[in-house]
Length: 264
Image 1 (cartoon, one colour):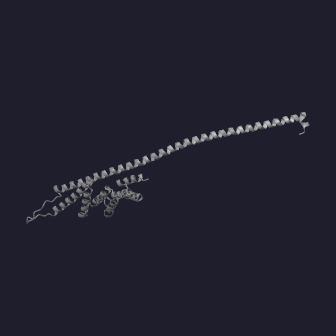
Image 2 (cartoon, one colour):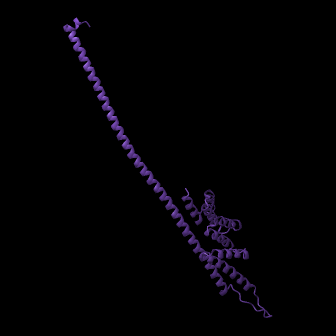
Image 3 (tube, helix red, strand yellow):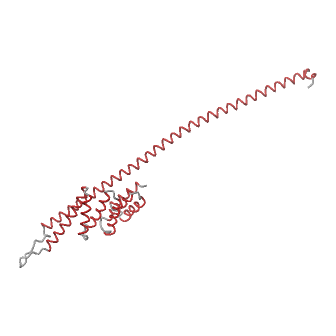
């Protein structure tokens, strides 16, 4: 612009317009900066809030997970305790049943001596004595006394004496109706001592030699327990499941189900 134009009224007006535009542009730019700064501050405050809220939620989540873990451990421990108590009570019931059985045997033996089954010696024409029946009764009394003595040693914790007694019983009376019981209690002797591989071997003999006897379910169950005790969980499960499959209505099957439940 030339000086004449600037000095003219129109020139002065143009200058003032330029100055006004510049000032307006400056104010507009400052407003945009302030607006952007305000928006940025709001975003920062929102971010801090979200971070704090997230931290609170994370702490709550950690607390819940901790409580869940503690409850799971408590439930597992409760199941294990109940299973152990159930097993202990079952063994006590089994012991009482065997004591009843032994008592019945002694009563039967006494009845043979005093009742009509017992035959007194018959005098022959030569004053001899027929001792056939007497000898049979005496042998029966001796076998049961040997068995009862071994069983009492087992109950009292005299394991070595019990082991010797039951083995002697099987050796002397292999065809007795108590032979399978004696073999089973040999396994129980080793089980009570924590000698689980030996217990498994003896319980297996029950299944091999007396698979139709009434001690077969208990033998299978205790083999499963023994495997679990030495850390062979899968093998133990196989025997527990076998008890349930082969003897579904037995007490041993119920015990097996309870033990399997603790292994889930």
